[in-house]
Image 1: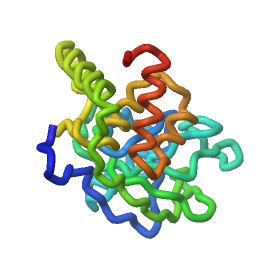
Image 2: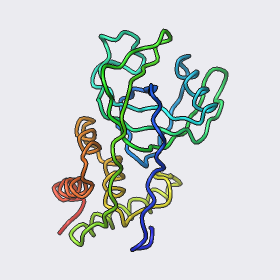
Image 3: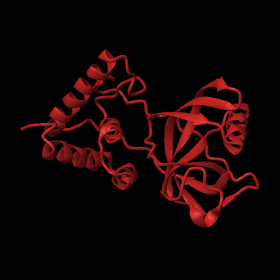
Image 4: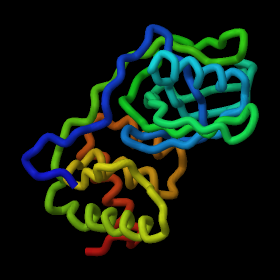
Length: 218
């Protein structure tokens, strides 16, 4: 937890390139989240290589229709708001397969229609979306904050590392985002929560869900 009164350090904002490479997934990436990818398609192997050479990231967008391996434009549709992924570590699992560990950075909105390169890699112009403003959770959210701290403790006891440190339990947006990663809600609901501009409202919605499901009482 960061100390009250100090600005909470959010994910480092990386500049968006003029043409952003996209990685469609059946998942919603949140700022500050950890993402592990098993990469074996030639287009994504090339993307990882390019990102490592240039120090740039790529955009993760959630699929609405189609599959991650889709190559025909008419068969793939994805959300217009995504999150930039920064590559933190790459391991060669075996010949032609990479295990890539990434972290979510800032959000972006696609501008215009995405297009595919000859190798099938999706590209799009994109504009950044402002990061969440830092807000301490209000007293009414204390149980939800404590429940997340307890969930982190239990996961750590199982030798699982659910989130990247530092654990910013004094930041409403960070708490809301981490709960959004854990909750078993539809992807469409996670997408709408990720897109919300106000982190306090996002946390309030999460709090209501947790109380409705009796995860948080009182």
